[in-house]
Length: 231
Image 1 (cartoon, rainbow, N blue to C red):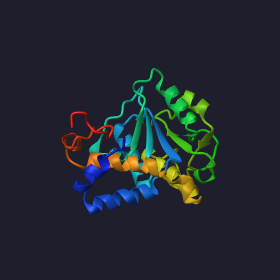
Image 2: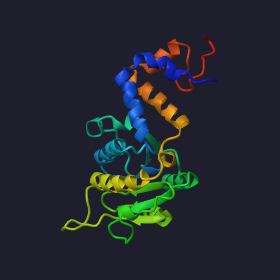
Image 3: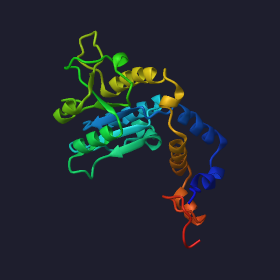
Image 4: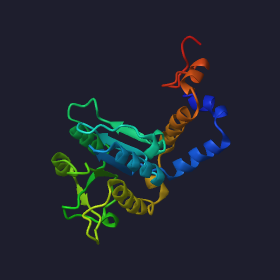
């Protein structure tokens, strides 16, 4: 049955908001995703998510078996609402579950580490989708993630500091990788229309106040978009 949610919510969205949806989707990609592995400070994770939204990276994977992520609206400015957040809290082995999912989706895993020789951001291969992994602020990525990695990536440091703040490092690396990705034909990196339509639905649900109650009142299931049986 056809999903009627977007059509039903459209009258409650401003033309400016609809235009913003289209502009954002036009620059979104799933050829690069970010993995945050047990980031110690939630504000750092939220800052990275804000960067993902600003650069057009749609998917963020969170591994939280040691350090859980707590939503921080002040730092993130609400940007997690516009991202697709993948969490592994229900998995017995969250790291393994995340790795397995990324591999099944065809991603090459690129871990960040200042201690391992590897690619500089502009050198990283982009012939396959890339999952960029940022580890905890103190120890970096786990041994399990390091063993699963296809690439290591680092930012050359020219001063006395060994590394950058995680949100700054993520922004620098993602920006350079995305430049390479977007040099390819748009058809190779843009989000397919079916997925883009689902994003518009998700964003509309989050933009319209009490959208679930409104849809139910109109006889539309808020989660599936199908007609409610009692209507």
